[in-house]
Length: 259
Image (cartoon, rainbow, N blue to C red):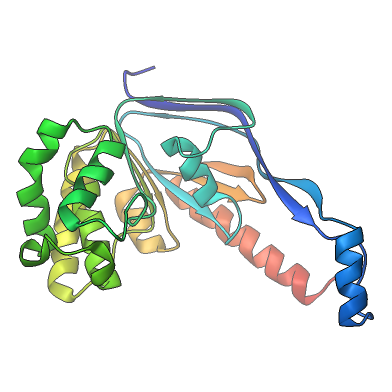
């Protein structure tokens, strides 16, 4: 296997949640309150990923497909290192950058410059490298004039621009994306598109979750289809899109005509 790769072997992920036992729909508010006090919530586990296995080698651009709730974003978070698998193994060789939540790691009470240091440090950059990049990050985000303000005073669009500028400031071996960036005004979207194209072209591996089939056909050469936390298909991107469509239509038909 090449020096840059992703290898996932029998990956499963379970997360805890709590349920309140009993049916309170026919009770008054006092009975419901007393019942909740006498019967505390019970801990359960939900399996979000179930026995997923695949390998991605350098040179592949992977379309990640699946219905809402199928496990795409959860899988990307595991690949990024944000979630640790409950069972199985995930091996990622090469530097990686995840464009999943552009506001992750920000502190609303800190200034923009302070947030650049916070976010870039979490990405593994050294303080000396970050200092040399602050100006270019603020310039790309078009936020130089408000660099000393607290992040909480900015609009959601401005915060998104800052997060994008930081996340794409360095070329990485592996890019993990949950939808293509498309926030902001037309001028910034075009600028972001050009940078995304450049970063994708320079990456050894790209994994892109999206429902935009035209873009996936243009960017990707292979595909993974998730369904109910399991890997339903792995293969060429056109076949992966068709497999996703087949699952979607079969599920829609089943809901319309239940057995």
